Length: 182
Image (cartoon, rainbow, N blue to C red; front, side, top):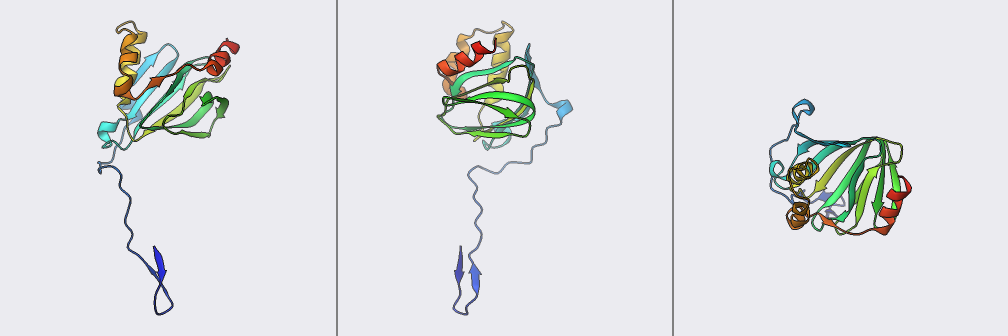
């Protein structure tokens, strides 16, 4: 806070940095050494999970093949999900509105907001995802991979909704958009 001094000058109050999370050591993840999770239409490169950031954030990069469906309609109760499109085009649902994010576009989806995403029709997409505060997303992505490979039952995803703060919802708007691009 800046205030006037009796001498007519200005005096700045001491700066108190905001620190909502415990400090953590710098995190460096080399692309060549990062763990990846893959399915037939996408590769996820795991960058930093909440355990390495003291709960501050989680981040991974997903590259979607043309026509890839990223995630059905869902919401998170505790975290905001941030999208940054590195390349290509990503179709997203936010609440009841569908838009296409292009290279360089950024989107922040607050908690409790239904959203979904897929590669835009006829396009690939390369997207950086960040969740803040951090969530245990890497185990969720690993579970998805096991389900897609037939190594785990899809019911495990539904049973893990609270643990991974991933709550699926029905979206007629999103279903219609996906059916229209098939």
